[in-house]
Image (cartoon, rainbow, N blue to C red; front, top):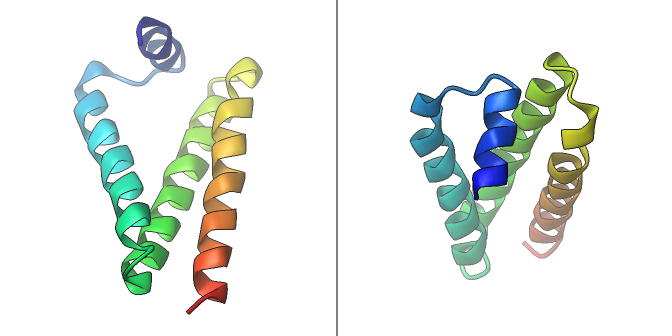
Length: 90
């Protein structure tokens, strides 16, 4: 946990954003899980998670933090896959 907060501080994320970002991640994960049973919510959550990780990648790029790029990039790919599977099974 400490490593994550240090990394976020290193790319310029203020402490005041932590609760909001955590809430967005939690809502996205919950939306994806509930979306298994109610596809429209899962699709909306998938779009939200994709936007979240695009923002994370942009933040890392602006801070010139190439070491921190792999994790949000992998999670972006997983989110895109979840969205595509959700759409394909509607």
